[in-house]
Length: 131
Image (cartoon, rainbow, N blue to C red; front, side, top):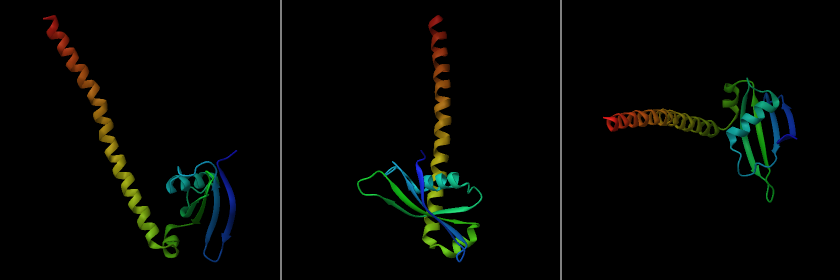
């Protein structure tokens, strides 16, 4: 059984968008908007479309999340119709994720170099003991 269940899927031809309402089973309190958008993209094969999470609600007393997503053919149309603060938040989150990834990369390199330096120091110490 899939963790994502389609509640409603409507093609809104007036606004040139698709409105999808999904229920995510067992992910209450754990699901982030970016993760939900990626799950919807995979479930509905929307790799080349712009998917925006409009509303995410946790169900009281249950570990379920209900989300509403708008799917646009291009980002320009979405920016005309959707509140600009949503795009500001998405850009802010993208910057934050990029900074976190950039901070992780040097930390991983330093962690990889540290054992090599320790091994070299140990080898040097062993050579001194032999002498």
